Length: 250
View (cartoon, rainbow, N blue to C red):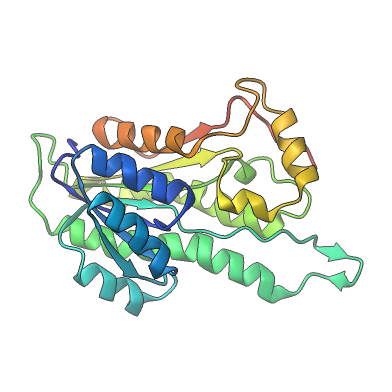
């Protein structure tokens, strides 16, 4: 799909990979709509790129529908909204609280599914844009923690593993309607989220990246997202973006 002139919704667009992707998508000539719980941050990015911003809780059907109603006719959805909260199953103070696990799953996994189902329904009502019958593209954000989760990442790994597992059946579900579904599984990316983990863990992650031996830059995520939109034969799979890294236990 040619992205120029198309409406692109980006969740978590107020910072990190979402904000950088918004800049790249806007530079490619798309109409960018940012959904974020932090409306001031999203509005700042939207003002910078000439886009729109709406407050949106991805875990709420009502909130997503309200944002969708104001967003026009979406052709592309890029899900970047997510949280990272590390906690061991059993720590010094006993077992982890269930609320922690449920919160991470609800935002990262349920939130991704919620936006995907509602935006996909809007895409399916549109006319195809090319001879293939393509109507839309959905790109979800997983993580290499889905495959090699570290100590303290049980909830996060489970949430991202769910996104990986959804990719193929979601693509199969939506194939007849001309909507492609892909996922990107980044390694460590230089975003505000990475700052929520310890410096020791950050150093450990960087030390295990073969090449380039550094954390990914947000624009390396956005470049891949743009290629996925453009390449119509990419569907139903997960692409690792990790410099050949494999996470150690800690």
